[in-house]
View 1 (cartoon, rainbow, N blue to C red):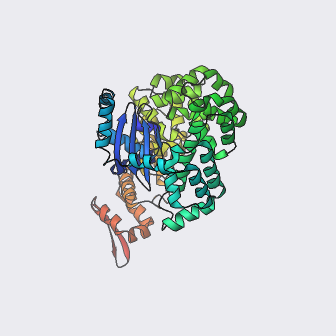
View 2 (cartoon, one colour; view 1 turned 90 degrees about the vertical axis):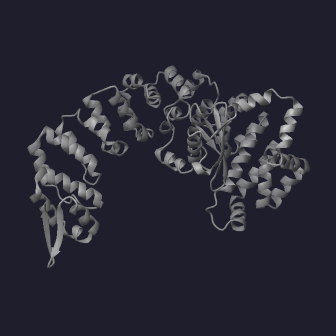
View 3 (spheres, rainbow, N blue to C red; view 1 turned 90 degrees about the horizontal axis):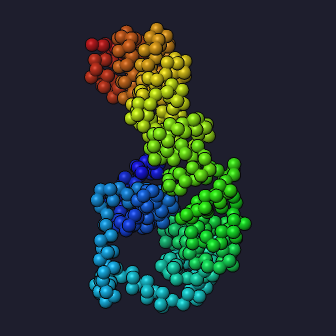
Length: 479
């Protein structure tokens, strides 16, 4: 599994700039655990098999913090805890106690948390939290979160939900100069919600939790622990929510998933491959869904699977499915690797909207398969980057030189709203195709542009195109 198969390109880029914020990264089994400094200090967990990341940040899953964690690990910056855990398992109780005591001065939170829990009257604290909420009480409640009962957590959350504006004002007006310090209230509520879901043990408690809409996502994420309450949950959840609940179980019943899929919620299964590829593949085969089989094949970079289900591509692009924004180039890479060529398929992959996802090699490989002049000329858009247009134009020249000559000679406003680097590229291209006289004409027709940009004139001069003003008149000399 590659990073780009799971994370958006922007998230990967931002995560790359966040590696220096990683305080530590430790590998335990198939998971990475890290602490990362951002607007707040965040805890991140990443599954090394699926690369799926969970984080305490507002983004929640598959965020830049997860990417930073993975990149630190890839560069050898993580602590591999497996051997240490084996060592701990071999120690006696007294030896384990000694290790804890010897390291307690560097990790006082263990003792502080213990002391805080022992010295706190939890029922009185909750009453004070509700009667006179403050930022320090919120901080203390976050440290004590795991020790509260279900009822205590529910009371605090209900207070926060019902008094959101007042709570927000107390936190940010009293303790921050601006709202750019991170959503500490959101983080706190998320902590309490997770703890509350973990505390559910009775039908009464699950029914109470289900009455609060904002807890539904946490119930879905905590599906495995709540599996015994599935019928109660099913009676309250929408069909889409219940399907997501089932798909968050460790070993869901595929027949039950199939029975829960409707026309309105089926899109939920198409999001699975990004973080649960094995489950997605099992569901796809069980329900014989070729669209999901195709998506799974794309994520697995399975060329045969892609080809076997290639007709589904047209259905996917007509539905504007999200994942193709970062998957198109991967598919074409596989086409190149296996020398797969098909004119009609190439046309499907050469939609205008896709061009920003391709490198030059991808466009060239696809365009060479197409001999339909009218189709190609419809792809040209001079408002876009000239590089992609140049590739298309070169193929048009090969198909019909005279028609392409006439087409290009009659293009107007070609240089409008272009960066100087692109203008240089365009002029060099037209000089090669039509000669110096045509370049002189283009420059004269865009006199204002060349008059105001000294950088442009300077760079054109390097290639023998000299632009000057003599007595207020534009002069162009080409050597």
